[in-house]
Image 1 (cartoon, rainbow, N blue to C red):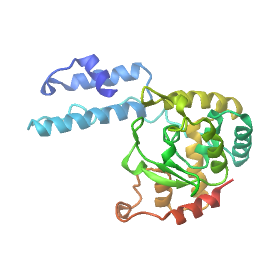
Image 2 (image 1 turned 180 degrees about the vertical axis):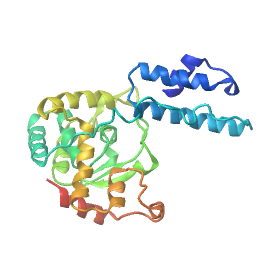
Image 3 (image 1 turned 90 degrees about the vertical axis):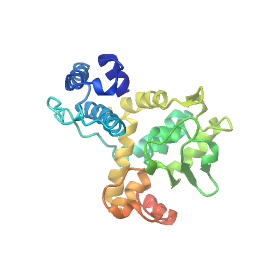
Image 4 (image 1 turned 45 degrees about the vertical axis):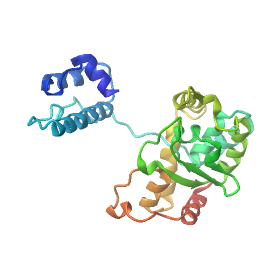
Amino acid sequence: MALAIFTSLADDRDISQYTREDAKLFVRHLEMKVNKTATIRRRINSLSAIINYAYAELDLDKRNIFSRLIIKREGDDSFKRGVFTNEQLKQGYDKALASGSQIKLLMPLLGETGCRLAEIVGLRLEDIDLEKDLIHIRPNATRRLKTRSSQRTLPLVGYARLAMEEAMKWSDGEYLFPRYIKDRKCKADHASAALNKWLKKDFDGLTAHCLRHTFRDRLEAVECPMDMIDQIGGWRSVSSIGNNYGQGYSMEQITKWMKLVSL
């Protein structure tokens, strides 16, 4: 996305021909489009990585045109994402289970696993093991995973187990949410829009992504080890260099902590 925007502004030229003014034009364009400053920084970082790689491969002794770019009022537009109370979660989960709507079942599935929405919407039936109460979050032909650490196995506990049983009634035998698998692509954004329409209305503007933040807060509240929280949520851990070694926490250990916060 960043590259498409940049080349539409500065044309697709030899990499050595781009200038600092091209980079500043890119930033001004994103600012005029009222992008969040964090989004602009992510776009800059993406292009900066491409430039660094190209300069190294082509042996060009040039300063990266995207280095140290200033974004006006960077960070001033950030806000802390809202979280659900336990009462709101219970209320929502009960509504979802009684609704007869598969899309509403995403609330307990996300809220009690901490998964990203696309990770659940893109599940294949072979990723789900109800005999052992497990789901395997792994890439498939319709959707990738955000990071390498996103690939993981999680227990289905409490409401998540109940919701999964109900959700599987809508399966086509291959995918859990077949209505959001189109042209061999996972349309997680469509599922997000449908789910958020309900959540925002019933829960004061809270969204599906708030469920993931809420789940992390719940684990922190019971003093779950930070590196285990990262493993459960598929976050890239920065808490310790030791997290890059070994096999991580066992399923028995993970289940213990997830049951501790289960509603």
